Amino acid sequence: MKNTILVISALLSFITTQATIRTVNNSTGGAGQYLSLQAALDASAAYDTVYIHASDIIYPQVYVVRPVVIFGEGALPDQQSLDATYIDRINFYFSEFYDTNASGSKIYGCKIGNLHLGTGNVNCNCNTSWYNSASYGVNNITIERCEIGNLKMTSEDIGVENYALGIQSNIVVKNNIIRRLEAGVMRNCLIANNIIGDPVVSGNPGVESYNNVFVNNTILGTYVSFSGAQVNNNLFMTILAHSGNLNIYGWNSALNKNVFSIPVTLCTDCGVTASTNVFAAGNIVNEAVWDWSNSTGQIWNSGYSNQGPFPDFHLLNGSVGSNYGTDNTDVGIYGGPFVWVDYLSPSPRYRYYAPPKQLPVLQEVNVLNSVVSPTGNINIQVKAKSQN
Image (cartoon, rainbow, N blue to C red; front, side, top):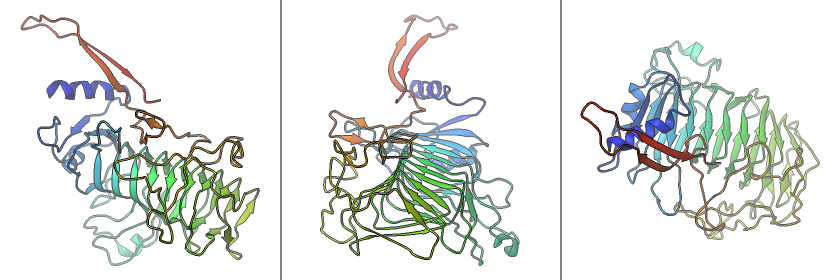
Protein backbone atom coordinates (compact mmCIF):
# COMPACT_ATOMS: atom_id res chain seq x y z
CA MET A 1 0.00 0.00 0.00
CA LYS A 2 2.86 2.34 0.80
CA ASN A 3 4.38 1.67 -2.62
CA THR A 4 1.05 2.59 -4.27
CA ILE A 5 1.04 5.96 -2.55
CA LEU A 6 4.66 6.58 -3.56
CA VAL A 7 3.93 5.77 -7.20
CA ILE A 8 0.90 8.10 -7.26
CA SER A 9 2.96 10.86 -5.68
CA ALA A 10 5.65 10.37 -8.30
CA LEU A 11 3.14 10.63 -11.13
CA LEU A 12 1.51 13.72 -9.68
CA SER A 13 4.91 15.38 -9.42
CA PHE A 14 4.74 15.77 -13.19
CA ILE A 15 1.90 18.25 -12.82
CA THR A 16 2.44 20.01 -9.51
CA THR A 17 5.47 21.68 -8.00
CA GLN A 18 6.08 23.29 -4.65
CA ALA A 19 2.80 21.99 -3.24
CA THR A 20 1.91 19.17 -0.90
CA ILE A 21 0.07 16.16 -2.35
CA ARG A 22 -2.46 14.33 -0.20
CA THR A 23 -4.14 11.04 -1.08
CA VAL A 24 -7.64 10.05 0.05
CA ASN A 25 -9.24 6.61 -0.02
CA ASN A 26 -12.41 5.67 1.87
CA SER A 27 -12.71 2.14 0.48
CA THR A 28 -12.24 -0.86 2.75
CA GLY A 29 -8.53 -1.65 3.04
CA GLY A 30 -7.67 1.10 0.56
CA ALA A 31 -4.31 2.81 0.45
CA GLY A 32 -4.44 6.51 1.21
CA GLN A 33 -3.14 9.04 3.68
CA TYR A 34 -6.67 10.13 4.57
CA LEU A 35 -9.95 8.29 4.96
CA SER A 36 -11.93 11.55 5.00
CA LEU A 37 -11.88 13.91 2.00
CA GLN A 38 -12.90 16.85 4.20
CA ALA A 39 -9.98 16.13 6.55
CA ALA A 40 -7.57 16.18 3.60
CA LEU A 41 -9.02 19.49 2.37
CA ASP A 42 -8.87 21.01 5.85
CA ALA A 43 -5.22 20.00 6.16
CA SER A 44 -4.33 21.51 2.76
CA ALA A 45 -2.72 24.87 2.27
CA ALA A 46 -3.46 27.07 -0.75
CA TYR A 47 -2.72 25.31 -4.07
CA ASP A 48 -2.05 21.92 -2.53
CA THR A 49 -3.19 18.85 -4.50
CA VAL A 50 -5.67 16.26 -3.24
CA TYR A 51 -5.77 12.95 -5.12
CA ILE A 52 -8.99 10.98 -4.51
CA HIS A 53 -9.03 7.26 -5.21
CA ALA A 54 -11.97 5.62 -6.92
CA SER A 55 -14.11 3.80 -4.38
CA ASP A 56 -17.29 1.77 -4.01
CA ILE A 57 -18.25 4.16 -1.19
CA ILE A 58 -19.51 7.66 -2.07
CA TYR A 59 -17.47 10.46 -0.54
CA PRO A 60 -19.80 12.71 1.50
CA GLN A 61 -20.36 16.45 1.06
CA VAL A 62 -17.29 18.67 1.46
CA TYR A 63 -16.55 22.40 1.74
CA VAL A 64 -13.60 24.02 -0.03
CA VAL A 65 -12.53 27.37 1.45
CA ARG A 66 -9.08 27.83 -0.14
CA PRO A 67 -7.68 27.19 -3.64
CA VAL A 68 -6.83 23.53 -4.12
CA VAL A 69 -6.30 21.13 -7.01
CA ILE A 70 -8.56 18.06 -6.84
CA PHE A 71 -7.86 14.96 -8.93
CA GLY A 72 -10.12 11.93 -9.17
CA GLU A 73 -9.46 8.68 -10.99
CA GLY A 74 -12.41 9.35 -13.31
CA ALA A 75 -16.19 9.57 -13.25
CA LEU A 76 -16.40 6.17 -14.98
CA PRO A 77 -12.91 5.04 -16.02
CA ASP A 78 -13.80 1.94 -18.09
CA GLN A 79 -15.97 -1.13 -18.07
CA GLN A 80 -13.29 -3.20 -16.33
CA SER A 81 -13.44 -1.04 -13.20
CA LEU A 82 -16.85 0.47 -12.54
CA ASP A 83 -15.81 2.22 -9.33
CA ALA A 84 -15.62 5.99 -9.73
CA THR A 85 -14.31 8.88 -7.72
CA TYR A 86 -17.84 9.83 -6.61
CA ILE A 87 -18.40 12.83 -4.33
CA ASP A 88 -21.91 13.60 -3.13
CA ARG A 89 -21.51 17.40 -3.15
CA ILE A 90 -18.67 19.91 -3.40
CA ASN A 91 -19.17 23.48 -2.17
CA PHE A 92 -16.67 26.14 -3.20
CA TYR A 93 -17.23 28.73 -0.47
CA PHE A 94 -15.68 31.56 1.45
CA SER A 95 -14.31 30.68 4.85
CA GLU A 96 -15.88 31.89 8.10
CA PHE A 97 -14.13 35.27 8.29
CA TYR A 98 -13.30 35.85 4.60
CA ASP A 99 -9.59 35.30 5.23
CA THR A 100 -9.51 32.72 2.42
CA ASN A 101 -11.81 31.50 -0.34
CA ALA A 102 -11.94 28.77 -2.97
CA SER A 103 -11.08 31.03 -5.93
CA GLY A 104 -8.33 29.51 -8.04
CA SER A 105 -9.37 25.89 -7.44
CA LYS A 106 -9.27 23.19 -10.12
CA ILE A 107 -11.08 19.86 -10.22
CA TYR A 108 -10.55 16.98 -12.63
CA GLY A 109 -11.92 13.47 -13.17
CA CYS A 110 -14.64 13.24 -10.50
CA LYS A 111 -18.27 12.15 -10.46
CA ILE A 112 -20.14 14.78 -8.44
CA GLY A 113 -23.77 14.76 -7.40
CA ASN A 114 -23.87 18.55 -6.89
CA LEU A 115 -21.09 21.04 -7.58
CA HIS A 116 -21.87 24.43 -6.12
CA LEU A 117 -19.74 27.44 -7.06
CA GLY A 118 -21.61 29.61 -4.59
CA THR A 119 -20.47 32.58 -2.55
CA GLY A 120 -22.28 31.68 0.64
CA ASN A 121 -20.16 30.92 3.67
CA VAL A 122 -20.25 28.95 6.85
CA ASN A 123 -21.22 30.89 10.02
CA CYS A 124 -20.63 34.27 8.40
CA ASN A 125 -20.49 37.22 10.81
CA CYS A 126 -20.11 39.80 8.01
CA ASN A 127 -22.03 43.00 7.47
CA THR A 128 -25.19 41.89 5.70
CA SER A 129 -25.65 45.11 3.73
CA TRP A 130 -22.17 44.70 2.22
CA TYR A 131 -22.75 40.99 1.82
CA ASN A 132 -25.90 41.68 -0.19
CA SER A 133 -24.13 44.03 -2.61
CA ALA A 134 -23.16 41.17 -4.98
CA SER A 135 -19.68 42.65 -5.33
CA TYR A 136 -17.76 39.45 -4.73
CA GLY A 137 -17.71 35.87 -5.90
CA VAL A 138 -15.81 32.66 -6.50
CA ASN A 139 -13.61 33.02 -9.58
CA ASN A 140 -10.79 31.43 -11.58
CA ILE A 141 -12.23 27.91 -11.24
CA THR A 142 -11.45 25.10 -13.71
CA ILE A 143 -13.69 22.02 -14.02
CA GLU A 144 -12.67 19.33 -16.49
CA ARG A 145 -13.63 15.74 -17.35
CA CYS A 146 -16.19 15.31 -14.60
CA GLU A 147 -19.75 13.98 -14.52
CA ILE A 148 -21.91 16.45 -12.59
CA GLY A 149 -25.53 15.96 -11.58
CA ASN A 150 -26.18 19.66 -10.95
CA LEU A 151 -23.69 22.45 -11.59
CA LYS A 152 -24.93 25.49 -9.69
CA MET A 153 -23.09 28.77 -10.17
CA THR A 154 -25.14 30.92 -7.80
CA SER A 155 -24.98 31.93 -4.15
CA GLU A 156 -26.35 30.09 -1.19
CA ASP A 157 -26.45 31.76 2.20
CA ILE A 158 -25.70 29.84 5.36
CA GLY A 159 -26.35 31.80 8.53
CA VAL A 160 -27.25 35.02 6.68
CA GLU A 161 -30.81 36.26 6.17
CA ASN A 162 -30.23 38.47 3.12
CA TYR A 163 -29.96 36.71 -0.22
CA ALA A 164 -26.90 37.58 -2.29
CA LEU A 165 -26.37 36.77 -5.94
CA GLY A 166 -22.60 36.98 -6.00
CA ILE A 167 -20.57 37.15 -9.20
CA GLN A 168 -18.90 34.11 -10.75
CA SER A 169 -16.05 35.15 -13.03
CA ASN A 170 -13.35 33.46 -15.10
CA ILE A 171 -14.87 29.99 -14.73
CA VAL A 172 -13.70 27.36 -17.26
CA VAL A 173 -15.97 24.32 -17.68
CA LYS A 174 -14.86 21.92 -20.41
CA ASN A 175 -15.24 18.27 -21.40
CA ASN A 176 -17.80 17.39 -18.73
CA ILE A 177 -21.18 15.65 -18.67
CA ILE A 178 -23.56 17.97 -16.82
CA ARG A 179 -27.13 16.89 -16.10
CA ARG A 180 -28.29 20.39 -15.13
CA LEU A 181 -26.58 23.78 -15.38
CA GLU A 182 -27.83 26.78 -13.42
CA ALA A 183 -25.96 30.06 -13.11
CA GLY A 184 -26.49 33.56 -11.75
CA VAL A 185 -24.17 36.46 -12.56
CA MET A 186 -21.51 35.19 -14.99
CA ARG A 187 -18.61 37.22 -16.29
CA ASN A 188 -15.83 36.06 -18.62
CA CYS A 189 -16.80 32.40 -18.31
CA LEU A 190 -16.10 29.65 -20.85
CA ILE A 191 -18.41 26.63 -21.19
CA ALA A 192 -16.89 24.44 -23.91
CA ASN A 193 -17.26 20.92 -25.32
CA ASN A 194 -19.60 19.63 -22.62
CA ILE A 195 -22.64 17.35 -22.81
CA ILE A 196 -25.31 19.35 -21.01
CA GLY A 197 -28.78 18.23 -19.96
CA ASP A 198 -31.97 20.06 -19.02
CA PRO A 199 -32.32 22.95 -18.40
CA VAL A 200 -29.46 25.26 -19.26
CA VAL A 201 -29.81 28.54 -17.40
CA SER A 202 -27.12 31.21 -17.57
CA GLY A 203 -27.81 34.49 -15.83
CA ASN A 204 -31.17 36.27 -15.82
CA PRO A 205 -32.56 39.55 -17.20
CA GLY A 206 -32.14 41.39 -13.90
CA VAL A 207 -28.35 41.09 -13.67
CA GLU A 208 -25.42 42.21 -15.76
CA SER A 209 -23.74 39.13 -17.17
CA TYR A 210 -21.24 39.64 -19.97
CA ASN A 211 -18.36 38.18 -22.01
CA ASN A 212 -19.46 34.57 -21.58
CA VAL A 213 -18.87 31.97 -24.29
CA PHE A 214 -20.83 28.75 -24.82
CA VAL A 215 -19.02 26.94 -27.61
CA ASN A 216 -19.13 23.41 -29.10
CA ASN A 217 -21.40 21.90 -26.46
CA THR A 218 -23.90 19.14 -27.18
CA ILE A 219 -27.03 20.36 -25.38
CA LEU A 220 -30.00 18.10 -24.70
CA GLY A 221 -32.28 20.50 -22.84
CA THR A 222 -35.77 21.72 -23.65
CA TYR A 223 -35.43 25.13 -21.99
CA VAL A 224 -32.34 27.29 -22.51
CA SER A 225 -31.58 30.76 -21.14
CA PHE A 226 -28.44 32.79 -21.80
CA SER A 227 -27.42 36.23 -20.58
CA GLY A 228 -24.54 38.28 -21.97
CA ALA A 229 -23.15 35.38 -23.99
CA GLN A 230 -21.80 34.32 -27.35
CA VAL A 231 -23.41 30.96 -28.18
CA ASN A 232 -21.44 29.43 -31.04
CA ASN A 233 -21.08 26.02 -32.71
CA ASN A 234 -23.35 24.15 -30.31
CA LEU A 235 -25.44 21.12 -31.19
CA PHE A 236 -28.90 21.26 -29.62
CA MET A 237 -29.83 17.59 -29.91
CA THR A 238 -33.34 17.66 -28.41
CA ILE A 239 -35.76 15.13 -29.89
CA LEU A 240 -38.90 15.81 -27.85
CA ALA A 241 -39.54 19.18 -26.20
CA HIS A 242 -42.20 20.06 -23.63
CA SER A 243 -44.00 22.41 -26.02
CA GLY A 244 -42.91 20.98 -29.36
CA ASN A 245 -40.30 23.73 -29.79
CA LEU A 246 -37.07 24.51 -27.98
CA ASN A 247 -37.57 27.75 -26.03
CA ILE A 248 -34.51 30.03 -25.93
CA TYR A 249 -34.28 33.20 -23.87
CA GLY A 250 -31.07 35.02 -24.75
CA TRP A 251 -30.85 38.38 -23.02
CA ASN A 252 -28.22 40.44 -24.86
CA SER A 253 -26.78 37.27 -26.37
CA ALA A 254 -25.83 36.23 -29.89
CA LEU A 255 -26.35 32.77 -31.43
CA ASN A 256 -24.05 31.86 -34.32
CA LYS A 257 -23.53 28.65 -36.29
CA ASN A 258 -25.58 26.42 -34.00
CA VAL A 259 -27.60 23.42 -35.19
CA PHE A 260 -30.97 22.59 -33.61
CA SER A 261 -32.68 19.25 -34.09
CA ILE A 262 -36.18 20.73 -33.59
CA PRO A 263 -37.90 24.08 -34.25
CA VAL A 264 -36.91 26.95 -31.95
CA THR A 265 -38.87 29.73 -30.30
CA LEU A 266 -36.74 32.80 -29.56
CA CYS A 267 -37.80 35.56 -27.19
CA THR A 268 -38.70 38.75 -29.06
CA ASP A 269 -37.88 41.41 -26.48
CA CYS A 270 -34.65 40.28 -24.81
CA GLY A 271 -31.99 41.51 -27.21
CA VAL A 272 -31.08 38.10 -28.65
CA THR A 273 -29.64 37.91 -32.17
CA ALA A 274 -29.56 34.69 -34.15
CA SER A 275 -27.77 34.45 -37.49
CA THR A 276 -26.43 31.57 -39.59
CA ASN A 277 -28.09 28.87 -37.47
CA VAL A 278 -29.84 25.73 -38.67
CA PHE A 279 -33.25 25.03 -37.14
CA ALA A 280 -35.34 21.82 -37.21
CA ALA A 281 -32.47 19.74 -38.60
CA GLY A 282 -33.71 16.44 -37.14
CA ASN A 283 -31.39 13.80 -35.78
CA ILE A 284 -27.84 14.39 -37.05
CA VAL A 285 -25.81 12.25 -34.61
CA ASN A 286 -24.95 8.56 -34.73
CA GLU A 287 -27.35 7.60 -31.95
CA ALA A 288 -30.68 9.35 -31.49
CA VAL A 289 -31.33 10.58 -27.97
CA TRP A 290 -34.80 9.22 -27.27
CA ASP A 291 -36.70 9.22 -24.01
CA TRP A 292 -36.94 5.64 -22.76
CA SER A 293 -40.11 6.44 -20.78
CA ASN A 294 -41.80 8.38 -23.63
CA SER A 295 -42.44 11.26 -21.24
CA THR A 296 -42.19 14.90 -22.26
CA GLY A 297 -38.82 16.56 -21.96
CA GLN A 298 -36.44 13.66 -22.52
CA ILE A 299 -32.73 13.96 -21.94
CA TRP A 300 -30.74 10.76 -22.28
CA ASN A 301 -30.46 7.83 -24.66
CA SER A 302 -32.41 4.69 -23.72
CA GLY A 303 -29.19 2.68 -23.49
CA TYR A 304 -27.51 5.08 -21.10
CA SER A 305 -27.02 4.23 -17.45
CA ASN A 306 -24.71 5.33 -14.67
CA GLN A 307 -22.65 2.25 -15.44
CA GLY A 308 -21.99 3.49 -19.01
CA PRO A 309 -21.73 3.83 -21.86
CA PHE A 310 -23.06 7.18 -23.02
CA PRO A 311 -24.43 7.78 -26.54
CA ASP A 312 -22.26 8.33 -29.59
CA PHE A 313 -22.63 12.02 -30.47
CA HIS A 314 -20.39 11.92 -33.53
CA LEU A 315 -22.14 13.52 -36.48
CA LEU A 316 -23.53 11.34 -39.22
CA ASN A 317 -21.63 11.36 -42.51
CA GLY A 318 -22.67 14.38 -44.54
CA SER A 319 -24.46 15.95 -41.59
CA VAL A 320 -25.44 19.61 -41.81
CA GLY A 321 -23.25 20.24 -38.75
CA SER A 322 -20.05 18.90 -40.34
CA ASN A 323 -17.44 21.66 -40.62
CA TYR A 324 -20.24 24.17 -40.03
CA GLY A 325 -18.76 25.95 -37.01
CA THR A 326 -17.33 29.46 -37.01
CA ASP A 327 -13.86 27.86 -36.95
CA ASN A 328 -14.79 25.40 -39.74
CA THR A 329 -14.87 22.43 -37.37
CA ASP A 330 -17.92 20.31 -36.49
CA VAL A 331 -20.61 21.67 -34.21
CA GLY A 332 -20.92 19.88 -30.87
CA ILE A 333 -18.39 18.21 -28.60
CA TYR A 334 -16.12 16.82 -31.33
CA GLY A 335 -15.24 20.24 -32.77
CA GLY A 336 -13.78 23.46 -31.47
CA PRO A 337 -10.91 24.22 -29.12
CA PHE A 338 -11.29 21.36 -26.59
CA VAL A 339 -12.30 18.32 -28.64
CA TRP A 340 -13.98 15.58 -26.60
CA VAL A 341 -11.78 12.51 -26.15
CA ASP A 342 -13.64 9.20 -26.25
CA TYR A 343 -12.35 6.63 -23.80
CA LEU A 344 -13.15 3.41 -25.63
CA SER A 345 -13.18 0.00 -24.00
CA PRO A 346 -13.15 -2.32 -25.77
CA SER A 347 -14.94 -1.10 -28.92
CA PRO A 348 -16.10 2.25 -30.35
CA ARG A 349 -19.66 1.53 -29.11
CA TYR A 350 -18.54 1.78 -25.48
CA ARG A 351 -17.80 5.38 -24.60
CA TYR A 352 -16.67 6.22 -21.10
CA TYR A 353 -15.43 9.41 -19.44
CA ALA A 354 -11.75 9.92 -19.99
CA PRO A 355 -9.67 10.26 -16.81
CA PRO A 356 -7.84 13.57 -16.30
CA LYS A 357 -5.38 14.14 -19.13
CA GLN A 358 -2.99 15.75 -16.64
CA LEU A 359 -2.69 12.40 -14.87
CA PRO A 360 -0.38 9.96 -16.67
CA VAL A 361 -1.57 6.34 -16.90
CA LEU A 362 0.78 3.99 -15.10
CA GLN A 363 1.95 1.27 -17.53
CA GLU A 364 4.91 -0.39 -15.90
CA VAL A 365 6.91 -0.34 -12.66
CA ASN A 366 10.31 -2.09 -12.56
CA VAL A 367 12.56 -2.64 -9.56
CA LEU A 368 16.07 -2.30 -11.00
CA ASN A 369 17.99 -3.70 -8.06
CA SER A 370 16.50 -6.79 -6.45
CA VAL A 371 19.03 -6.87 -3.57
CA VAL A 372 19.38 -3.83 -1.34
CA SER A 373 21.63 -3.33 1.67
CA PRO A 374 20.08 -2.02 4.92
CA THR A 375 21.38 1.47 4.12
CA GLY A 376 20.96 1.28 0.36
CA ASN A 377 18.33 2.67 -2.01
CA ILE A 378 15.73 0.86 -4.11
CA ASN A 379 15.93 1.96 -7.74
CA ILE A 380 12.50 1.97 -9.39
CA GLN A 381 11.70 2.70 -13.02
CA VAL A 382 8.20 4.03 -13.70
CA LYS A 383 6.72 4.12 -17.22
CA ALA A 384 3.53 6.05 -17.92
CA LYS A 385 1.67 7.67 -20.81
CA SER A 386 -0.61 10.68 -21.13
CA GLN A 387 -4.37 10.28 -21.58
CA ASN A 388 -4.30 12.02 -24.97
